[in-house]
Image 1: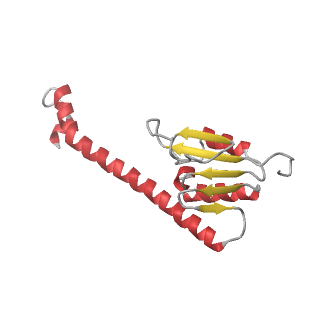
Image 2: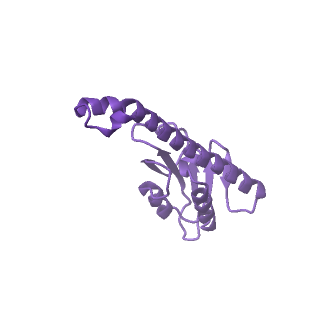
Image 3: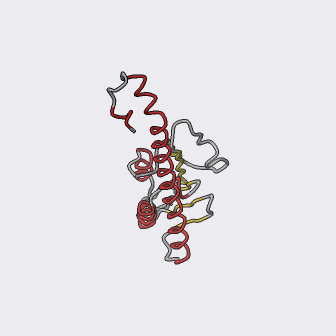
Amino acid sequence: MNTEGKEMAKVGYIRVSSVDQNTDRQLDGITLDKVFTEKVSGATTDRPQLQAMLEYVREGDSIVVHSIDRLARSLADLLKLVEDLNKRGIHIRFNKEQLEFTGEDNPMQKLMLSMMGSFAEFERSAIAAQIAASSTVFFLIFLPTWTQAIFPPGQCAVEKF
């Protein structure tokens, strides 16, 4: 029981980045009292189900997340979420990395959280850069074709490239 006299809850948080992705295997086989699931980018903490979970959990509760990058893709957001939860007496466990944060002052845990969070942020940045580069190549290849189909010859500035 927590300090409010309530049973402690084991709460799951599941997130994928897009609606066509599957959430089924993230916390498969883990018994949870309540699960918050969403299909949105982890770029910010402005996510409806994340906010609902943060409001729901109480001192003594435990949150289970498949992996660090499912909770946050920004190192600053990750560190703030974990610190705020721990200050409220809420434990958080990341299954894939087999890391649990309880609020105890453990230098190795802090190092691991910072390193894994940095990898998650780097991965997101690399994906964004790759998408931007792909979009640029796509437009450089197909823009002249599209403009020729739409505009009569000599009436489009793109033809000069």
